[in-house]
Image (cartoon, rainbow, N blue to C red; front, side, top):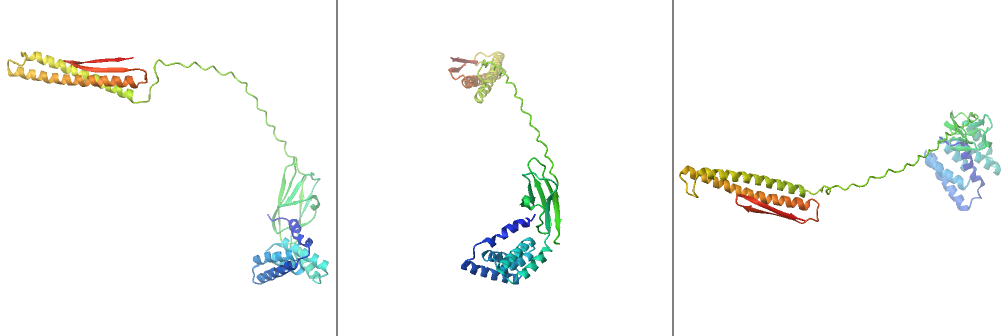
Length: 330
Protein backbone atom coordinates (compact mmCIF):
# COMPACT_ATOMS: atom_id res chain seq x y z
CA UNK A 1 0.00 0.00 0.00
CA UNK A 2 1.18 3.57 -0.75
CA UNK A 3 1.49 5.96 2.24
CA UNK A 4 -0.94 8.81 2.58
CA UNK A 5 -0.17 12.34 1.39
CA UNK A 6 0.13 13.58 4.94
CA UNK A 7 3.50 11.84 5.21
CA UNK A 8 4.63 13.45 1.97
CA UNK A 9 3.53 16.88 3.11
CA UNK A 10 5.48 16.67 6.35
CA UNK A 11 8.64 15.41 4.60
CA UNK A 12 8.52 17.74 1.60
CA UNK A 13 7.62 21.00 3.28
CA UNK A 14 10.75 20.76 5.41
CA UNK A 15 13.11 22.52 2.95
CA UNK A 16 11.05 25.72 3.22
CA UNK A 17 12.21 26.13 6.83
CA UNK A 18 15.88 25.62 6.02
CA UNK A 19 18.47 28.33 6.44
CA UNK A 20 19.45 30.44 3.40
CA UNK A 21 21.50 28.49 0.89
CA UNK A 22 25.23 29.02 0.84
CA UNK A 23 27.12 29.85 -2.32
CA UNK A 24 28.48 26.32 -2.73
CA UNK A 25 24.97 24.88 -2.16
CA UNK A 26 23.61 27.19 -4.84
CA UNK A 27 26.30 26.10 -7.27
CA UNK A 28 25.59 22.42 -6.58
CA UNK A 29 21.84 23.04 -6.87
CA UNK A 30 22.32 24.67 -10.27
CA UNK A 31 24.44 21.78 -11.60
CA UNK A 32 21.95 19.20 -10.32
CA UNK A 33 19.04 21.12 -11.84
CA UNK A 34 20.76 21.27 -15.23
CA UNK A 35 21.60 17.55 -15.10
CA UNK A 36 18.02 16.64 -14.18
CA UNK A 37 16.56 18.90 -16.87
CA UNK A 38 18.79 17.33 -19.53
CA UNK A 39 17.81 13.79 -18.43
CA UNK A 40 14.13 14.71 -18.73
CA UNK A 41 14.76 15.92 -22.28
CA UNK A 42 16.31 12.51 -23.00
CA UNK A 43 13.24 10.76 -21.52
CA UNK A 44 15.11 9.30 -18.53
CA UNK A 45 12.72 10.50 -15.82
CA UNK A 46 13.75 7.82 -13.33
CA UNK A 47 17.29 9.24 -13.21
CA UNK A 48 16.20 12.87 -13.50
CA UNK A 49 13.84 13.00 -10.49
CA UNK A 50 16.45 12.25 -7.78
CA UNK A 51 18.78 14.96 -9.16
CA UNK A 52 15.97 17.52 -9.29
CA UNK A 53 14.90 16.56 -5.74
CA UNK A 54 18.45 17.15 -4.46
CA UNK A 55 18.60 20.48 -6.32
CA UNK A 56 15.30 21.59 -4.73
CA UNK A 57 16.56 20.54 -1.30
CA UNK A 58 19.71 22.63 -1.61
CA UNK A 59 17.90 25.63 -3.14
CA UNK A 60 14.05 25.45 -3.13
CA UNK A 61 13.30 27.86 -5.95
CA UNK A 62 10.05 28.07 -7.89
CA UNK A 63 11.73 26.70 -11.01
CA UNK A 64 13.38 23.75 -9.22
CA UNK A 65 10.18 22.74 -7.46
CA UNK A 66 8.07 23.11 -10.60
CA UNK A 67 10.49 21.01 -12.66
CA UNK A 68 10.57 18.34 -9.93
CA UNK A 69 6.73 18.32 -9.80
CA UNK A 70 6.55 17.73 -13.56
CA UNK A 71 9.10 14.89 -13.32
CA UNK A 72 7.27 13.13 -10.46
CA UNK A 73 3.89 13.47 -12.19
CA UNK A 74 5.36 11.71 -15.21
CA UNK A 75 6.50 8.90 -12.85
CA UNK A 76 2.87 8.52 -11.58
CA UNK A 77 3.71 9.90 -8.15
CA UNK A 78 0.76 12.27 -8.11
CA UNK A 79 0.69 13.00 -4.39
CA UNK A 80 4.36 13.95 -4.37
CA UNK A 81 3.93 16.14 -7.47
CA UNK A 82 0.89 17.82 -5.88
CA UNK A 83 2.96 18.65 -2.79
CA UNK A 84 5.79 20.06 -4.94
CA UNK A 85 3.36 22.45 -6.63
CA UNK A 86 2.12 23.54 -3.19
CA UNK A 87 5.72 24.24 -2.16
CA UNK A 88 6.35 26.15 -5.39
CA UNK A 89 3.23 28.27 -4.81
CA UNK A 90 4.32 29.10 -1.25
CA UNK A 91 7.78 30.16 -2.47
CA UNK A 92 6.33 32.23 -5.35
CA UNK A 93 3.88 34.07 -3.10
CA UNK A 94 6.47 34.79 -0.40
CA UNK A 95 8.94 36.09 -2.98
CA UNK A 96 6.35 37.99 -5.04
CA UNK A 97 7.30 35.88 -8.05
CA UNK A 98 5.23 36.65 -11.14
CA UNK A 99 5.01 32.92 -11.87
CA UNK A 100 2.68 32.41 -8.92
CA UNK A 101 -0.40 32.48 -11.18
CA UNK A 102 1.06 29.78 -13.45
CA UNK A 103 1.94 27.60 -10.45
CA UNK A 104 -1.57 28.05 -9.05
CA UNK A 105 -3.10 26.86 -12.33
CA UNK A 106 -0.90 23.73 -12.31
CA UNK A 107 -1.85 23.06 -8.71
CA UNK A 108 -5.55 23.38 -9.54
CA UNK A 109 -5.15 21.08 -12.54
CA UNK A 110 -3.45 18.39 -10.44
CA UNK A 111 -6.01 18.77 -7.66
CA UNK A 112 -8.68 17.66 -10.17
CA UNK A 113 -6.69 14.42 -10.71
CA UNK A 114 -5.32 13.42 -7.29
CA UNK A 115 -7.90 11.36 -5.35
CA UNK A 116 -8.50 11.98 -1.65
CA UNK A 117 -9.61 9.94 1.35
CA UNK A 118 -11.47 11.49 4.26
CA UNK A 119 -11.69 9.47 7.47
CA UNK A 120 -14.61 10.07 9.85
CA UNK A 121 -15.75 8.42 13.07
CA UNK A 122 -19.34 7.31 13.59
CA UNK A 123 -19.03 7.79 17.35
CA UNK A 124 -16.62 8.82 20.05
CA UNK A 125 -13.26 7.14 19.58
CA UNK A 126 -11.33 5.76 22.57
CA UNK A 127 -8.57 8.04 23.81
CA UNK A 128 -5.90 5.50 22.84
CA UNK A 129 -7.35 4.74 19.40
CA UNK A 130 -4.86 4.48 16.53
CA UNK A 131 -6.07 5.25 12.99
CA UNK A 132 -3.96 4.34 9.97
CA UNK A 133 -4.33 4.92 6.26
CA UNK A 134 -1.93 2.40 4.76
CA UNK A 135 1.33 3.03 6.64
CA UNK A 136 0.46 6.57 7.81
CA UNK A 137 -0.81 7.06 11.36
CA UNK A 138 -3.41 9.84 11.68
CA UNK A 139 -4.10 11.99 14.70
CA UNK A 140 -7.57 13.10 15.85
CA UNK A 141 -7.13 16.44 14.05
CA UNK A 142 -6.95 14.69 10.69
CA UNK A 143 -10.46 13.24 10.97
CA UNK A 144 -12.74 14.77 8.38
CA UNK A 145 -9.89 16.32 6.35
CA UNK A 146 -9.57 15.08 2.72
CA UNK A 147 -6.06 13.66 2.41
CA UNK A 148 -4.44 13.21 -1.02
CA UNK A 149 -3.57 9.59 -1.86
CA UNK A 150 -2.23 7.79 -4.90
CA UNK A 151 -4.74 6.13 -7.22
CA UNK A 152 -5.32 2.47 -6.38
CA UNK A 153 -6.17 0.36 -3.32
CA UNK A 154 -5.79 1.64 0.25
CA UNK A 155 -6.50 0.23 3.69
CA UNK A 156 -8.05 2.17 6.58
CA UNK A 157 -7.60 0.61 10.02
CA UNK A 158 -8.59 1.50 13.59
CA UNK A 159 -7.35 -0.19 16.77
CA UNK A 160 -7.69 0.45 20.51
CA UNK A 161 -6.95 -1.40 23.71
CA UNK A 162 -9.76 -3.74 24.73
CA UNK A 163 -11.52 -3.32 21.36
CA UNK A 164 -11.77 -5.46 18.26
CA UNK A 165 -9.61 -4.19 15.40
CA UNK A 166 -11.50 -2.75 12.44
CA UNK A 167 -10.28 -2.28 8.88
CA UNK A 168 -11.64 -1.78 5.40
CA UNK A 169 -10.21 -1.48 1.88
CA UNK A 170 -11.08 1.29 -0.57
CA UNK A 171 -10.30 1.69 -4.26
CA UNK A 172 -9.79 5.21 -5.63
CA UNK A 173 -9.24 6.46 -9.18
CA UNK A 174 -7.30 9.41 -10.61
CA UNK A 175 -10.40 11.58 -10.81
CA UNK A 176 -9.84 14.05 -7.97
CA UNK A 177 -12.85 12.68 -6.05
CA UNK A 178 -12.94 12.40 -2.25
CA UNK A 179 -13.82 9.00 -0.77
CA UNK A 180 -15.19 9.16 2.77
CA UNK A 181 -14.54 6.23 5.10
CA UNK A 182 -16.58 6.08 8.31
CA UNK A 183 -15.15 4.14 11.24
CA UNK A 184 -17.95 2.48 13.24
CA UNK A 185 -18.02 2.32 17.01
CA UNK A 186 -15.39 -0.25 17.92
CA UNK A 187 -16.76 -3.39 19.53
CA UNK A 188 -15.44 -4.67 22.82
CA UNK A 189 -12.95 -7.48 22.51
CA UNK A 190 -13.95 -10.72 24.28
CA UNK A 191 -12.46 -11.14 27.71
CA UNK A 192 -9.57 -13.57 27.74
CA UNK A 193 -10.46 -17.02 29.03
CA UNK A 194 -8.85 -17.50 32.43
CA UNK A 195 -6.40 -20.32 32.56
CA UNK A 196 -7.30 -22.72 35.40
CA UNK A 197 -4.64 -23.04 38.02
CA UNK A 198 -2.86 -26.32 38.03
CA UNK A 199 -3.94 -28.56 40.91
CA UNK A 200 -0.84 -29.79 42.71
CA UNK A 201 -0.53 -33.53 42.75
CA UNK A 202 -0.12 -34.91 46.31
CA UNK A 203 3.32 -36.21 46.83
CA UNK A 204 3.39 -39.96 47.27
CA UNK A 205 5.89 -41.72 49.43
CA UNK A 206 8.42 -43.54 47.36
CA UNK A 207 8.16 -47.30 47.53
CA UNK A 208 11.08 -48.86 49.35
CA UNK A 209 13.50 -50.42 46.99
CA UNK A 210 13.89 -54.18 47.40
CA UNK A 211 17.22 -55.17 48.87
CA UNK A 212 19.71 -56.15 46.25
CA UNK A 213 19.86 -59.88 45.85
CA UNK A 214 23.21 -61.54 45.66
CA UNK A 215 23.24 -64.28 43.03
CA UNK A 216 24.73 -67.58 44.10
CA UNK A 217 27.19 -67.33 41.27
CA UNK A 218 29.05 -64.54 39.55
CA UNK A 219 27.27 -62.82 36.63
CA UNK A 220 27.98 -64.37 33.28
CA UNK A 221 31.02 -62.96 31.60
CA UNK A 222 30.95 -61.63 28.10
CA UNK A 223 34.31 -63.26 27.41
CA UNK A 224 34.28 -66.20 24.94
CA UNK A 225 36.94 -68.10 26.90
CA UNK A 226 34.58 -69.97 29.28
CA UNK A 227 32.56 -71.21 26.32
CA UNK A 228 35.75 -72.25 24.56
CA UNK A 229 36.80 -74.16 27.68
CA UNK A 230 33.51 -76.04 27.77
CA UNK A 231 33.74 -76.91 24.08
CA UNK A 232 37.33 -78.09 24.47
CA UNK A 233 36.45 -80.20 27.51
CA UNK A 234 33.51 -81.71 25.62
CA UNK A 235 35.75 -82.64 22.72
CA UNK A 236 38.18 -84.23 25.18
CA UNK A 237 35.44 -86.33 26.79
CA UNK A 238 34.31 -87.49 23.35
CA UNK A 239 37.87 -88.52 22.52
CA UNK A 240 38.15 -90.40 25.83
CA UNK A 241 34.93 -92.25 25.10
CA UNK A 242 36.15 -93.20 21.62
CA UNK A 243 39.51 -94.30 23.04
CA UNK A 244 37.76 -96.52 25.60
CA UNK A 245 35.65 -98.07 22.85
CA UNK A 246 38.76 -98.85 20.77
CA UNK A 247 40.36 -100.33 23.90
CA UNK A 248 37.45 -102.71 24.36
CA UNK A 249 37.68 -103.70 20.69
CA UNK A 250 41.43 -104.38 21.06
CA UNK A 251 40.86 -106.57 24.12
CA UNK A 252 38.15 -108.58 22.33
CA UNK A 253 40.25 -109.20 19.24
CA UNK A 254 43.26 -110.18 21.33
CA UNK A 255 41.14 -112.84 23.05
CA UNK A 256 39.77 -114.07 19.71
CA UNK A 257 43.30 -114.51 18.27
CA UNK A 258 44.28 -117.24 20.81
CA UNK A 259 47.92 -116.24 20.41
CA UNK A 260 50.64 -116.74 22.98
CA UNK A 261 52.53 -113.44 22.87
CA UNK A 262 53.36 -113.06 19.18
CA UNK A 263 53.09 -116.78 18.38
CA UNK A 264 49.81 -117.59 16.67
CA UNK A 265 48.50 -120.98 15.58
CA UNK A 266 47.60 -119.89 12.08
CA UNK A 267 47.46 -116.91 9.67
CA UNK A 268 43.89 -115.97 10.62
CA UNK A 269 44.83 -115.68 14.26
CA UNK A 270 47.84 -113.54 13.32
CA UNK A 271 45.56 -111.19 11.32
CA UNK A 272 43.16 -110.91 14.23
CA UNK A 273 46.09 -110.11 16.53
CA UNK A 274 47.18 -107.37 14.10
CA UNK A 275 43.72 -105.87 14.21
CA UNK A 276 43.85 -105.93 18.01
CA UNK A 277 47.15 -104.03 17.99
CA UNK A 278 45.75 -101.43 15.58
CA UNK A 279 42.68 -100.90 17.78
CA UNK A 280 44.95 -100.65 20.82
CA UNK A 281 47.05 -97.96 19.10
CA UNK A 282 43.94 -95.98 18.25
CA UNK A 283 42.69 -96.36 21.80
CA UNK A 284 45.96 -95.09 23.25
CA UNK A 285 46.08 -92.07 20.89
CA UNK A 286 42.46 -91.07 21.50
CA UNK A 287 42.85 -91.45 25.26
CA UNK A 288 45.94 -89.25 25.29
CA UNK A 289 44.39 -86.58 23.07
CA UNK A 290 41.06 -86.73 24.89
CA UNK A 291 42.76 -86.44 28.26
CA UNK A 292 44.75 -83.42 27.13
CA UNK A 293 41.67 -81.70 25.64
CA UNK A 294 39.57 -82.40 28.71
CA UNK A 295 42.26 -81.10 31.03
CA UNK A 296 42.78 -77.98 28.91
CA UNK A 297 39.04 -77.29 28.64
CA UNK A 298 38.47 -77.62 32.37
CA UNK A 299 41.46 -75.40 33.06
CA UNK A 300 40.23 -72.66 30.65
CA UNK A 301 36.71 -72.73 32.06
CA UNK A 302 37.81 -72.57 35.69
CA UNK A 303 40.33 -69.80 35.11
CA UNK A 304 38.15 -67.55 32.94
CA UNK A 305 34.69 -67.95 34.50
CA UNK A 306 35.24 -64.95 36.79
CA UNK A 307 36.76 -66.47 39.91
CA UNK A 308 40.09 -64.68 39.71
CA UNK A 309 41.03 -65.66 43.25
CA UNK A 310 41.11 -69.38 42.41
CA UNK A 311 44.33 -71.20 41.62
CA UNK A 312 43.65 -74.19 39.37
CA UNK A 313 45.97 -77.05 38.45
CA UNK A 314 44.80 -79.83 36.11
CA UNK A 315 46.91 -82.60 34.56
CA UNK A 316 46.45 -85.75 32.49
CA UNK A 317 48.64 -88.87 32.72
CA UNK A 318 48.42 -91.60 30.04
CA UNK A 319 48.08 -95.12 31.42
CA UNK A 320 48.04 -98.52 29.71
CA UNK A 321 44.53 -98.80 28.30
CA UNK A 322 43.43 -95.34 29.53
CA UNK A 323 44.41 -91.92 30.92
CA UNK A 324 44.38 -90.49 34.42
CA UNK A 325 43.18 -86.86 34.95
CA UNK A 326 44.13 -85.12 38.21
CA UNK A 327 43.54 -81.58 39.33
CA UNK A 328 43.41 -79.24 42.30
CA UNK A 329 42.16 -75.74 42.99
CA UNK A 330 41.77 -73.40 45.94
